[in-house]
Length: 125
Image 1 (cartoon, rainbow, N blue to C red):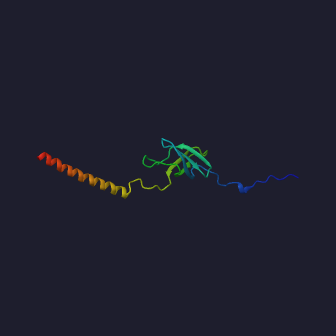
Image 2 (tube, rainbow, N blue to C red; image 1 turned 90 degrees about the vertical axis):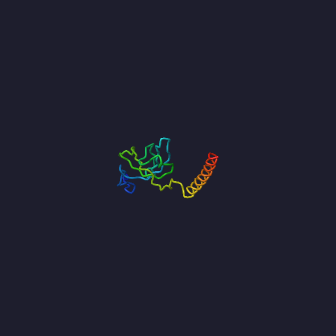
Image 3 (tube, one colour; image 1 turned 30 degrees about the vertical axis):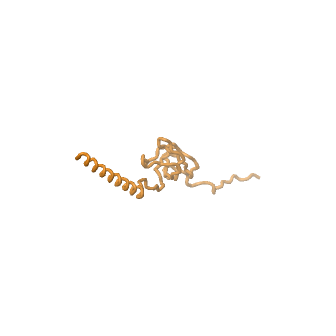
């Protein structure tokens, strides 16, 4: 007696991967020109180097940044990275730093005013 050829339907998927779905990726590497290599854990693979969208010289991606990405083709070769999903800290100086700079500038202005007074006195002599 032969064993019938049984298909295990529990291991199949009725939702095959399709282009246009969004994935969470993690930046593995950023090269000098800003291109990134991204690991997409849901697919178990890394893709890149690719140029991320929405990245500027002031807002660059870094290693381990979480990004949103998608593919434009059914072969998962054309990756589009939509910038960082991380909330980054403000890149501007803190209040403490600004207050220190204001105190330094005020002090320098006082010293300049004092020196101007000396120069004026010497010129009038």
